[in-house]
Length: 348
Ligand code: 10E
Ligand code: SF4
Image 1 (cartoon, rainbow, N blue to C red):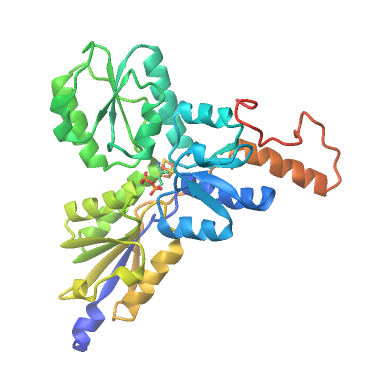
Image 2: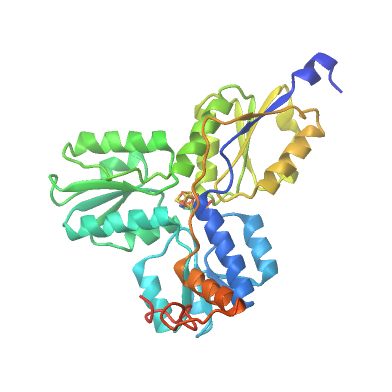
């Protein structure tokens, strides 16, 4: 046990905002409500959000996660993940007569719409993002012949366009703000007429979590980010913390993954979590730290968040119809179709 002075100097700086964003909250509730409304099993294409604990918890409630729609039995219900899907995935679902609930975050849909619009105007679209990430695959699928992926500043030299006077950049929603600006600057050096998206593609939640962890990291010897390894925004938080002065930074799914050796010579531990992480996991980390003398927790909150999104429309309609039926209200077929989670193609 260390001396009293060292023990009392130990503290945790807890970043806020952290954890669930509005899009994740909506997607997770969509799966839970679908299970309640239609009963198990409910199929989910890809991880609804990139978090091990969330996926396991929903599996226990009856969700079945699949990689592709072809794994879903004909006539079943499938939910598309918060990261979005390419139009071809909707077409595949229609062919298989699947009923779909689209849990794509509205802020991802916004980027899809920008891609469609710029493609229609015959722009070359430079999509800044990480190769192979589901969101990038979905956005690229909106206009594959117009979109070129740019995976960071080092990739800029490889970019080729048809007409330098008609080029726009868009981005994945969960990138590092600073690294993206580096990529944009490098693109502008090559294509001076490059235009920018009409509004930020990196979403409010990604930006806010990065701003908060920067403030925390500047005073931390160690930063612990709670999040899964395949969660882009969580991985970015570790990078941003290290770039902002944290002496060490680690990503963990659970408190049990923390190594005691990380605490050697540490007095201030910064803690945050990715946008797909329920706060119960952060509480586990705080308990683990408190048991080791880090019970003094100070919240660092540079801004507040209050955004929420309504549930996917297919689900809202059925929930409304059920509520109306339960209260004995007459339900007209126009106001509340009997089965609004219908096979793909019938509602698009
Ligand atoms: O890997 P990502 O950070 O994109 O996803 P996540 O599921 O960890 O967090 C939510 C972010 C989404 C759905 C993408 N905008
Ligand atoms: Fe939507 Fe941003 Fe959350 Fe992604 S990180 S789900 S874009 S709010």
